[in-house]
Every structure is written in C-alpha cells, then in structure tokens.
Image 1 (spheres, one colour):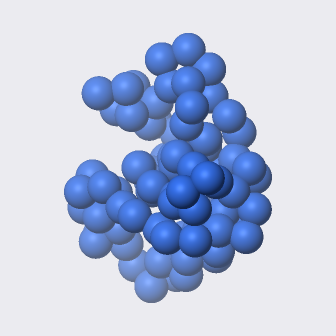
Image 2 (tube, rainbow, N blue to C red; image 1 turned 90 degrees about the vertical axis):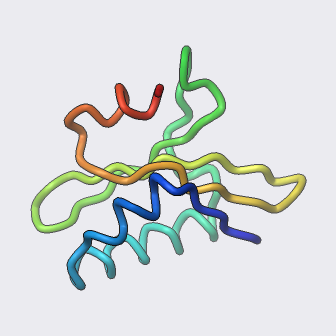
Length: 90
C-alpha cells in the first residue's frame, strides 16, 4: 500500500511535537491496515474518509482518500475539528 501526502498535510505535520507525531503515526498505521476505518463523508466531501483519534485529551481528525484498486492512500489534512471541514472543502 503506497501512502501519498498533500502539501497541506505536510505543512501541518511539520509543526507537530514528538508525542503528537507518534499518535499520528499510529493513526496512519491503522488506516494502512484497514483503509475503511474512517467515516465516509457525503455531500461536498463525497469519497473522502475522516479518521478520528485522541491526542493529548483532544480529538484530532485525519482526512484521507483510499483507492483499494490502485493500493493508494492519500493523506489530505490533519487537525482539530475547528474549521477542519470548511478548510477541507477549499
């Protein structure tokens, strides 16, 4: 399974501390092992999935798109719930 990232995702990951980075790595491993684990979105975000997990007592969201036929996962965005979906639509 190939994992690709977007520039937006890379910018948000660059700012993380070590503990947050470990939690994100675990979330990515979960997604790689079970690509359908995230909640499938509807409407404007149709086709995307969002995986929710906890880090430092705060809920974090990880948006991704998975294509099982091509065996590719594209990590789109990472952050807290505040303005996450609004920014993801842009």
